[in-house]
Length: 130
Image 1 (cartoon, helix red, strand yellow):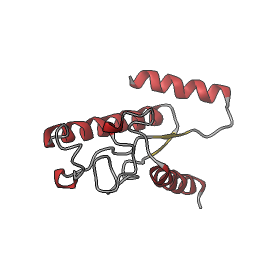
Image 2: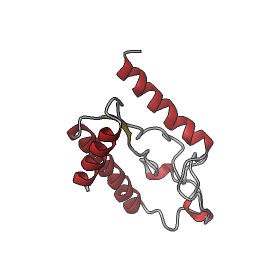
Image 3: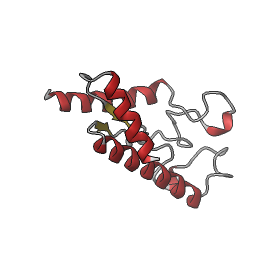
Image 4: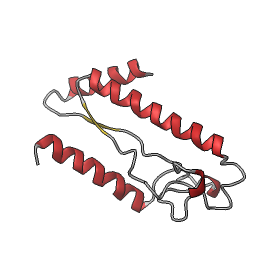
């Protein structure tokens, strides 16, 4: 809930009043186009309709996080495109595919973390005037 996020961000700043809080969103986990879904193990469950709904949920979550950060007076780093071309179920995903049944399930691998870090670093540079 957005109100809970605002309160959480406000509480963080109360404990670190001189800190500048930069809230990081979520990368898009599924490809934007159905033709980019190539892994056979994904095709049975990742229909076009499900992919669209999942990407819309991600978009709405990021909008809520960004709005909460703004309401709390904090900054937001958009990493939606961090995995672009390498989303789950693509030819070379930068995320652990859902069907692998591991604890890392759905989390970015090293290349995905690097993609996220680059976008966050760019946002930080922008905020610092670099």
